[in-house]
Structures are given as structure tokens and as C-alpha cells.
Image 1 (cartoon, helix red, strand yellow):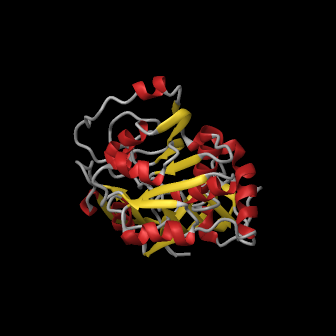
Image 2 (spheres, helix red, strand yellow):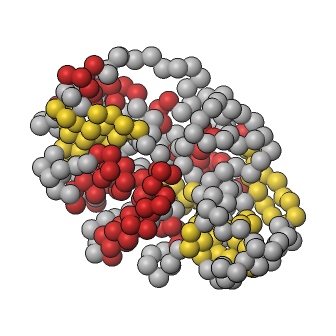
Length: 335
């Protein structure tokens, strides 16, 4: 094992869009193993939009990353040394190990991952938190019914691309928005979405939604927020369900955004909007992972991973999320 541990720490609180200078690479001595611990050599890191909130001092559902602290994030790797009675050397585990080469764990908050089911990277994508967010967010909060229209914003991203496919498996009409012609083609030609459009080229979101969702919208899976979501509220059907998963358009705002007041549409349509945190479903992950793995095996679910090589490129990969540079799940290959 190496004598040092490369890490990426938070160097500054971002103002607006994060910059590479908000992060700093450091080297520390390799972790020393204590009784009841094991050492993980990390192979892949996950970078996700929610991490932007963890970089802020503003109060949220999880503690902020302290300046000088290793950047938080999910990771998957192999146990290279163990003094834990229940974990053995060679096992693959997933946990919030952060942006570093090696991590110590006592087993809390970790899961074993069976690489005979799918490649190790999928522990952070279709069979990881991303897949579970799509699965439980749509099925538990959205409650789609056969024949309904499900609209997904950010549909070519890690979560959205899976939501649309699950909607199709449930007999729904799946419609999505994405940020390029290539992504729109991917949604329709590769993932089987019934319709999709490039939100960057749409001058009138309401008119565009009328075009692609002529029967209105029964379930809206919102990853984006902003003007597009405002327009969706105007096209929801009676008893629609709005799943508030993310609001990426607002994550880098330096002041509270102003927009139309749309909640009255919930009254008129007797509709429901509900936010959720996937951490509330952790105890049910085995259930969701079993079903997603089965769909994957049967070829009913496809996934795409955008992989950047090198721990030192984690900040660049993270910032790229806010420019729409990823297709599907954005990962960093450490080892």
C-alpha cells in the first residue's frame, strides 16, 4: 500500500458557480488501521449536484463541509486491509468515503457490492444512490399509473434518464427535456422516451409542453426548477403529482430567484408537490437494487456513465455538471 493518501479538500466557499480554485489537492500520511476498522482503496468517486449545497455554510439537511476538510461524496472501492470482524480483505464496499485515494471505515454507513451482478462503477450509478433516487422518487412519490404522462426535467442526467425508463416499464408515456440535440436524440432513440425537447432552444415552454404533452402532465419529476418548472405547473392535470428531486438551476444563485407564483395551480388541479431525500429510503435499498438489477439483467434498463480519469480532475468533473457536460452518471475513476 502507498505511504501517502491523496485527497481533495474544500479550500473556499464558492460564490455562484464553483471554481477549481475552491478545491485544493493535498497529500497526507496513509491512514493507520485501528481495531474494528478496515481500509478501502477507492476506485470510483461520484460527483453530484447536491454537493454544491454541502459547500455552503447555509443551513441544510446535512452538515456543511468545513474548509480544509475532505470533500464529501459517495465512493466505491476494495478493502485492502481489515481489522473488522465482519469485513474481509478483497470485499467491495460503497460508502460516503469522500474525494480521496484511501478511506478508513468501521462499517457504519457502508454496503457491500456484488461485482458479479454488474460492473463496480454501477454501485454509484444505476444500482447505487442514483438508481434508488429514480426508483423510489418516481414510484413512491410520483405513483405513476398506466396510461399517464410522466415528464422529466434534466432527463439525460443520472437520475432523469432512469426515471423515464421506469415510467415506460410502468406503462406510462415518458417525456423529457435536455440541454442539447444529442441528448434529445439519446433519450428518444436509445432510452425509448416517447418525446423530448432541447430546453435551450425552446422560446415558449408552455407551448412546447402543449406540443410534447398534448394530454397534459400527470407526474412531473423535477430535477431542475426555474422557468421550466413554472411552465409545468400550468400544464398539470387534475390530481397530478410533482416530485421535487432537485433544483439545479438555483444551486449557484447568489440571491433568491424571483418568478411566477404558481402554487395556486395545486389548488385548482387538486394536485400535490412533494420533496424527498433519498436517505429516507436507505433501509429499502435492497428492495430497489434487486428490482433494478433484474431489469438490468433483462435488458429493460439502460444506463450511461461519463467517466473522468484521475482524482485531481474531480473538481473539473463536478463543475461540469452545472454546464451539462455529462450524459447519464458523472464518475471519477481514481484507481
